[in-house]
Length: 128
Ligand code: HEM
Image (cartoon, rainbow, N blue to C red; front, side, top):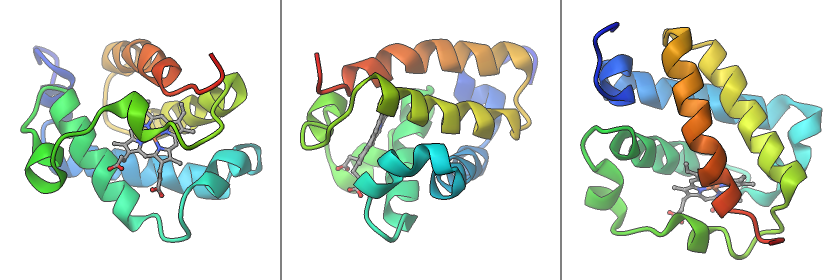
């Protein structure tokens, strides 16, 4: 959608955001360079697909599905238990960039999302 006001509008549906997150975790699950962050996650990635997708739907300007389903979340606090430095942050961002590249989103929105996710990912670091 070219005149979309929010990234969620640009995606056009919750299903499209879920698909993005599904591809994101497929990348994490298969790219050897992302093994370190894959190993931080549980064997079954389905619950995380649901959690990250519902979170991103709200974060991108859509309905707050994560809060409806799981309650409140403070993203930096949710990552305290994990060793996340620059390398792990970059692995996460790589999966997201590759997933966005496979999405229907136009270049302008892909860049806007990556620009907004970088500070979010930095907030998840535990080495600072
Ligand atoms: C910086 C790199 C990041 C790494 C390495 C990372 C890793 C993880 C891990 C290992 C978990 C727990 C998974 C499990 O329970 O199996 C998690 C949970 C989660 N992460 Fe991240 N994450 C990162 C960045 C982000 C960012 C930028 C966001 C949001 C845009 C995010 C959103 C979430 C959410 C919503 C949860 C679920 C929280 C809960 O319900 O407990 N993560 N992450």
